Length: 170
Image (cartoon, rainbow, N blue to C red; front, side, top):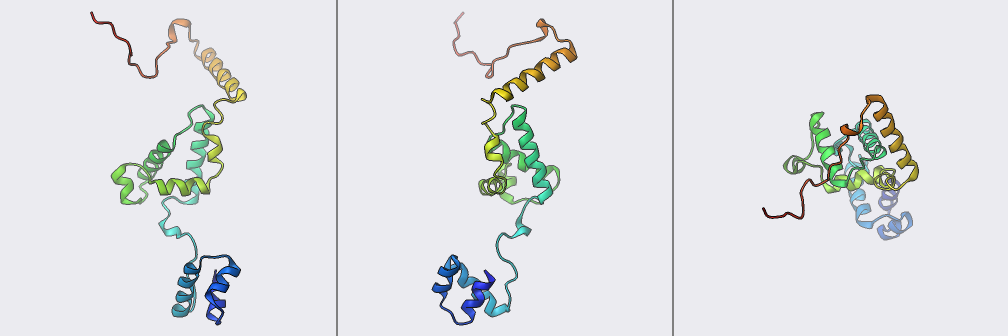
């Protein structure tokens, strides 16, 4: 970007330089103005001071999400938004006011997070139908049953909702 701005400052046409470098001409115009006034371009691209998490913290968050997907507990996008807010709050990280108001991260943060971590999009629900993952689940179940010596009367089948849909009047 700086090379393109320097070409414009050196009397080349803005439109031609924008086309040659395949950049937006308005963005190039802003950088040229900054270059003319300050003599240099201090920052280009994503402003890291506005980032909520450090690279290490974000890597830990990604690791947690991937681990949750591997143990049959894939997180929905809303779960990830809530998790990010809780993680920031637990680590006393300064986050945007909208996060505190909604008690979850913003949708814009989520979309950028997913772009930075493209390996997450494949991990969510795709593993549920996988035969290998299914076998792994039953191997883990067998291991737990053997370890704790559960018997038939210790195992319960619970409905997900817990609400009966058909009721008979007494």
